[in-house]
Image 1 (cartoon, each protein chain N blue to C red):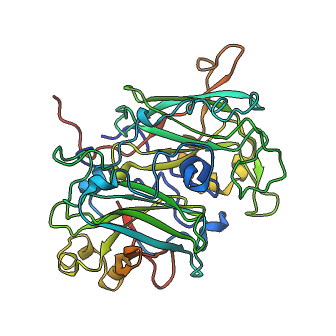
Image 2: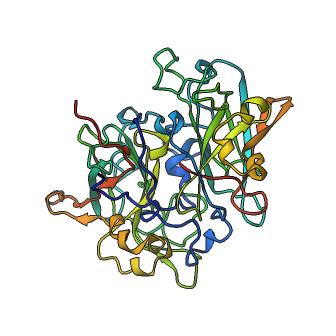
Length: 233
Length: 196
């Protein structure tokens, strides 16, 4: 639990309704939000950390295996989870899910005509260490079509869900890949205010890349932090 | 002084279930949370069901939403904030609306006690869905706590005509006490959402 909570910075988050993203039309709230000063119910939150990473769940190339390795380009994704003051958020869970290398989700609703991979579930989780660093291994997700508009394709992306220290620091986001030509055509990515969109794009990092094994990407995540400057001691 | 900008929120999308609510939907991954609040027996006090639907601007129930709840135990103690509380009670539960034939979320929990600052007993709620680019915070208050609700400082911030959207009706059923709480994302009865 933190002692205070900085506001959700609406210059950093998408508005609830976006003309380009059709599903927001009937789903995005229309009334002004009512301001709720953070109390104990917002500052405290469920404690999900490394104890909730089961088995191979930080390695999506392993946790769905049935009879072999999943298809696709192995990647390592790592980064630091921190608050707005740059302080580490230690031992917090990062839940991830994604399409397989062919752009197909395991989810029963996904009817895209691309192959499922019997050895890839596409969901897992990891936790940050004492320095706020998380790391998971997976395969690069494929792009896939969706019915938002004619010839609409989602860019390659990985969904991430984080808790942080309180219910008020909850975040669900998506990580994108550098240089993807679909980014400029994607209404979900573009619903994010233009000046901050690059925060959703991972950096390729040769230092994270593991020789002869997997490409490395770095994606830092900033959660809401304490409103007040912390006192020393 | 903040030096780092917040990572923008993005929608949970339509395919969250095998990652976030896998056991509820029958996917082969262990879940971290369930529609039954963790450590229910350790929460003290009466067991209740909380159920409802998430409705869009046409009044149609949504079957690809996910609801999370966070609450105090029956004595008003949030997990992790009071050493006297039974630490087995997690105060947290998660439910998708895609497994019930009526597209309901159904939580099993205990009725929370009042936690602090003269607030009425309530459950903190987050709504996630395809088409929700940022998650939406709301609160569930209890219809049978009229006196406490009338004195609640958060309800007092809500325009009187909209307060009813936050109050769950109590029903005694053959399944026990059920609080019904529909969440309207839009429309004349749009639920009050908070800028937490």
